[in-house]
Every structure is written in C-alpha cells, then in structure tokens.
Image 1 (cartoon, rainbow, N blue to C red):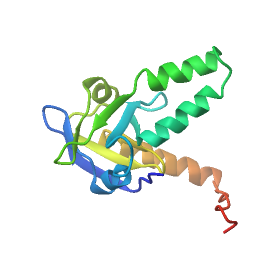
Image 2 (cartoon, helix red, strand yellow; image 1 turned 90 degrees about the vertical axis):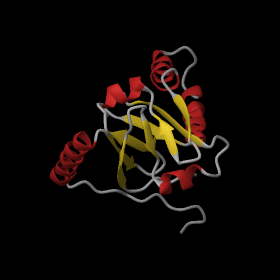
Image 3 (cartoon, helix red, strand yellow; image 1 turned 90 degrees about the horizontal axis):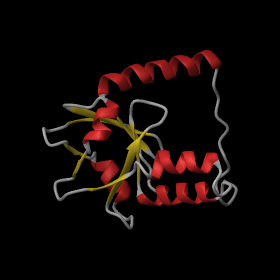
Image 4 (cartoon, rainbow, N blue to C red; image 1 turned 120 degrees about the vertical axis):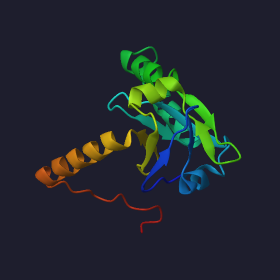
Length: 154
C-alpha cells in the first residue's frame, strides 16, 4: 500500500503542470497505474488524491453498500464520477484539470499534503489555515489515537 507523508509546496505553471513530490512518486511507482487519481473533496476546498489501489479499495467499500441506495449513489457520484486519472510524465509532473484547480483555489502553487494512505492538494495558504484550525480542535478535545495492532500481533 502506498504511504504519503509530509507536506510539499510546488509551483504550478500556466498549463496546470505541477511536479509531484519525489516521495509521493515513489509511493505509486509499483502500482498498476503509474500516476495518481484525484477528485474534488466534498468536505474541503481541496483535491483528494491517492494511488489506484486505494481507489479499488474505495470501489469495494462502495459496492458493499446497499445497491441503489442513496448513500451508494452519493458516494459513487461524488467520488468516481469526478475522479481523474493523472499520469506522471517523465519529468515527474501531472497536469491538474481546471475543475480541480478551481475547486481548491489553486493558481501558482500547490501544497501536497500527506494523509497516510491518501493525500490532498491544497492552495498553500488555505492549507496553513486548515492545519492551524485542526491543531486547535485536536488540542481542545485532548484527542488521542488508539493504534490498531499490526498483522502478526506486533
């Protein structure tokens, strides 16, 4: 499974080309699709992105919902109908489609934000605000996280 860590800010050119951070490129290198899959976040003014294996996992999870249910339709319409397969070119770049850039308010720079199995692409200033708000919320709640046991019980 691909693992995306850290935050990287890269320039976006007039054609929407942006370099994918090297650690993120390495994370998708062994995937069936040599690129990323991206779609508009329905929660934030950001782009959700992941490797193709994560999209397959999302597909299986949505398929497990009741066929023709409103919940299944909402997820399929929100995620899959909006998804773009973005190949990584020989220079390590992708081209961000304008609907995704418009949704995230991205123009001349993009922040690639690791989220473990997925990542997001943000307008850098918007992400800085979002991250500050998230830290404040987590601190106020005294948030903790229980680690799930690793396979093999470790």
